[in-house]
Length: 93
Image 1 (cartoon, rainbow, N blue to C red):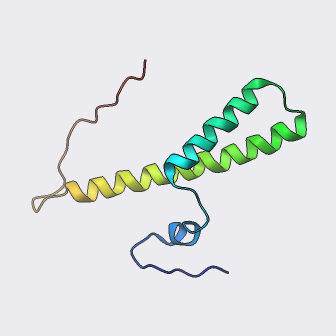
Image 2: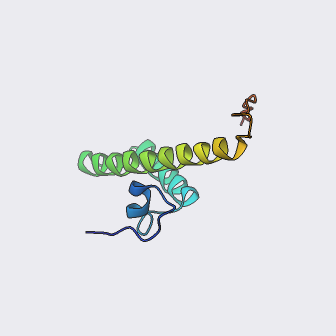
């Protein structure tokens, strides 16, 4: 069983960081899996396996984004309490 090496990371993150890809790599892998699924060239078993791998990568990316958001919120806190600001999302279109 894996042991935690650094006390600064969250417990679940510390165990999986050694073998898990970085966010950008995981996102690129997820995009590649989506393209494979959309191609329609996979048989049912291949598609199911690809979908399962995609779900795992999506969970990893979501967890990393949530952790980044938490870090940002912690950094924005001031001595008088949390700062509130509008979140601006870019439009990719």
